[in-house]
Image 1 (cartoon, rainbow, N blue to C red):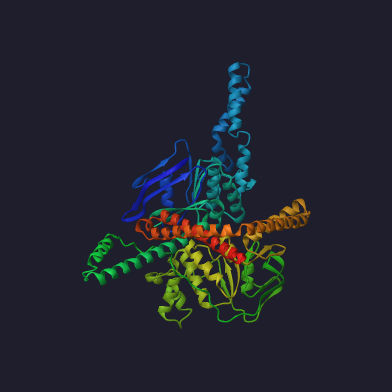
Image 2: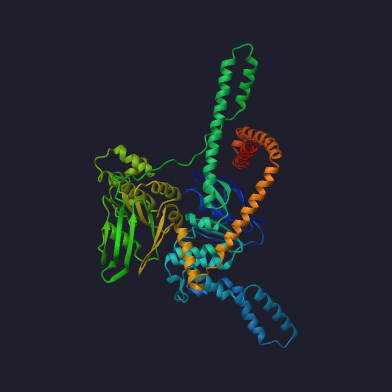
Length: 633
C-alpha cells in the first residue's frame, strides 16, 4: 500500500529553484534514506512531504487513516511537564481509558456496566494498556535517559537532550510513517546502536535524512537521491547506492561518448559523400537523420577533486611503543597500564566510551601532555602530524590564504590556491577570515595544513566532524592511499570501517587489541559477551564439518561423472546458447545508445542490468565450453 505520494512537486525560494518535478512514493513498511549534497533541499522536501510547508507546484497525497510523525533537524520539546509526564501524554487516550475502567470497577452491579467494562478492558489490553509504562521506560533508557531524568522538568534539559526527548516521543507515538531529519545528532555510539535495532523492528514505514552513512546502511533498504532538484530511486542501502551511482555515471558517460562517436562518424560520411552524384541520396538521408538527433548533454559526473597525504621520508618499521603508560591530568587519572605497539603502514582506530581518554592519549603521543607514568617511544624517522578536534585557528582574523601561506612562505600563491581548491575552497573564498568559515570549511583548512606538513605518522582526532559526505569520501580515499601510519579517533562508524585495519579499545584499566575494523570489533565484543554469559561450547562441529566435506566430495565425483557421460550433447547445447546470448547482448548495446534510452535513468539501468546478466551468463558458457572441449579431446 502506498502511504505517501508526491506528484510533480516543485519549490523555489526567490529566483532559486530548490525542487523541480519531484515524483516519488513511499510504500507501507518501506525503509527509505534521502541523501544529497548539503543545500540540495532535503529538509525542504521533508517539510513538504509532511505538510509543514506547501509546494509551489504539484501535490502530495497521504493515504487516509495513516498518521505521519515528523522530527525536524534539531527539533525539540518545550514543556513545563516532567520528562515522564511528557511521555505519558502520548498515551493520554489509554490513561483516560484506564481511569474509566477504575470508575466502572466500583459499579459493576448492572449488566450495562459489565458489558462496558468487558469491552473497554479488551480494547485497553489490545492497545497496550498494560505495557505502555514499560514502553516509555524502555525508549527513554534506550535514548540515554537514566531514571534520574524522569522527574526533571523538560525545560531544564539541554538542547541536545530535548532533541532526544522529541525523538523518544515520536517513537512512542508509532506513526504509520516516521519521518526523521538527522536523528543521529546528539546520539553516542551505544544510543545509535539501540536506535538502529529499534527502527529495524518499527511497525511502520521510515523516511530518514542522515549524514551518518553507517546508520543509513543499517536502517534503510531504499535510497532516494536528491540531485539538481530531482529525485532518483535506488534499491538497497547506502553502500549499494554508492556502487550503483558510480556504475550509472560510468555507464552514462560511456553511452554519451558512443553517441558522440556515432554522430561524428555519420557527419564524416555526409561530408565525404554529399558532393558525389552516386552517394548524394544516401548522404542527404543520413543528414536528415542527424538533424533529428538531439545530442545528449554530457552526464553530470561526481566531482573529481582529490588530494593525497605525501610523506617526506619513510619511517622505521616500528613507529610507536607504549609501555605501562598512565594518562590523564594532575588529580584526574583516565587510563592506566597502557601497552601497545604500532608498526609502519598500520591504520589503527582508537575506540572507547566518552571520557575514556582517547583525545588525551592522542595529545600525549603528540607531545602536548606528559604521561603520568610509564613512557612512550617514537621510532626512527617518525614525523608526527596531529589533527585536533578543536581547531586552534578557528577564531583567527587571518585570511584563509594567509593561514597557509604564512606557514609555508616558500610556496607561490598559485600553489596555495591549488591546494585550497583541492579542499573545495575556491575563488574569493580564500580571502575570507578564518572566523567567518563554517565548521566544515575550518576542518578542510586544517586538513590542508596537515597535508603540507607531509608527516609519516598521522594522529587524527574526529577528522570527519563538520565534513559533508562528499568531503568525507575524499578524505577516506586519501587516507586509504596514505603510505605512512595512522592512529585516529572517530565516532563515524562508516569511516572507522573504511579506514581501520586494526582497532584498539581504550578502557580505564588498559587497552584491548582487535586485529580488524569496527564491524570486526563489534562482532568480537558480542562473542565475548555471549561467552561471558553462557560459557564456550566446543562441540563436535569440527568432526561434523569433516564428514560434510567427505559427503560433498562424493557428490562432486558423481556430478563430474554425469557430466562426462553427457559431454558432447552439452557442448552442442552450449554453442547454441552462446550464439543466442551474443545476439541478445548486441541488440541491447544498440538500444542503449538511443537517446530515448540513454536519457531515461531507470530504463538505462534496467537495460544495463540485463546486459551485465547476459555477459555473466556468456562468461559462464565460455568457461564451461572451454572446459568441456578440453575434456573431449
